[in-house]
Length: 313
Image 1 (cartoon, rainbow, N blue to C red):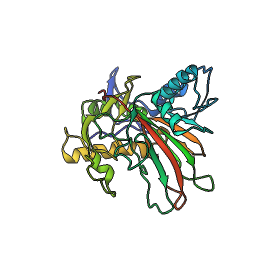
Image 2 (cartoon, rainbow, N blue to C red; image 1 turned 30 degrees about the vertical axis):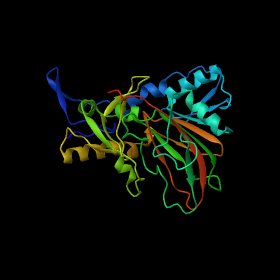
Image 3 (cartoon, rainbow, N blue to C red; image 1 turned 45 degrees about the horizontal axis):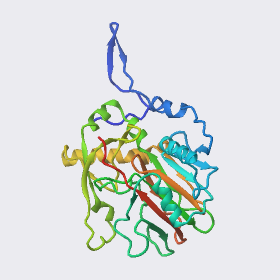
Image 4 (cartoon, helix red, strand yellow; image 1 turned 180 degrees about the vertical axis):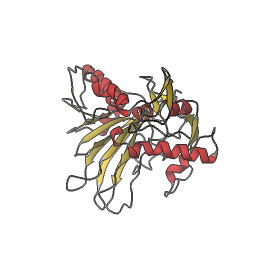
C-alpha cells in the first residue's frame, strides 16, 4: 500500500530518459506550500487582518462584533474563506448579539442533544474544577456523523483559567492535509466514501435518553461549497470505516489519514484564549482540538453554530 509522500525523500522509482535511467521524484511538500505562502496579502480597508501562520488562522482587529458595518462584514467573509479560523479579541457581546453575528453567515444550528434549559441555539462551554476531561479534547470536526454537518462555529470565551494560560485550541487545515498527499494517494481516496458514526463520539460518556445517534456516509474527499477546494474529510472522533475496503485495509488507511494532523504541525495553528475572545472557524475544512491542560482550574464560554448544507463530493 502506498504511503503519503512527506517531502523528505525521493521515491525508488526510475524512468528511462534518453537511453539512461534517472530517478523520478514525487512533488515535495514545499511545492504544495508555495501557493499559500506566496499569496499576495489582501488590501483590507475596513478591518485589520494578521495571519497566525501562512496556511491557517488570522487575528482580526478594528471591529466591534456587536456593531459590524456592511463593509466590515463583507471583509470578514473574505478573511474567513482565506484563513478558515478568525480570532477576535476584546469583544463584549451579549447572547443576542452573538446569535445575530452567527446569523449573518447562515441559519442558526440548534444544540443537539438539546440543553435541559436555556437558549436552544447556545451551548454553554463550562469546565468545573472537578472535571476529569472536557468535550473536544482530541482532534475532530463537529458533528460529521450528521447528514448535513455545520458550516462553522463561533466560540466566545469570557472566563479563562486563572493565571492566564491553559486551554489553547489547535486548528488544522484539511485542505492542505489533502494537497500534501501524493498524487497516487489522492487518486485512491477521491473515489471512496467513509462512514461517520455518532456513537464513537460518546465513548466514555453516557448517551442522553431519547437521543437518536446519527450515522451517515460521506465522500472521503469533499469540496468546499464556496471555493470548490478539496478537503480530506475524515476525523477520529466520528469516522469509523471505509466501506469499499476490507476491515484491515480500512483501519490501515484511516489510521494513516488521522495521523496526518498529529504528525504535521505545519497544518496547524494554536489559539491562546484571553477573556472576551471570540473564535470563528470553518467546520467544513478545519479540525480542532480543545486542549485540557488546566485541571483543576475553570473556564466558561458559549458557542453558537451555523447550519451547513449537503456535502459536495
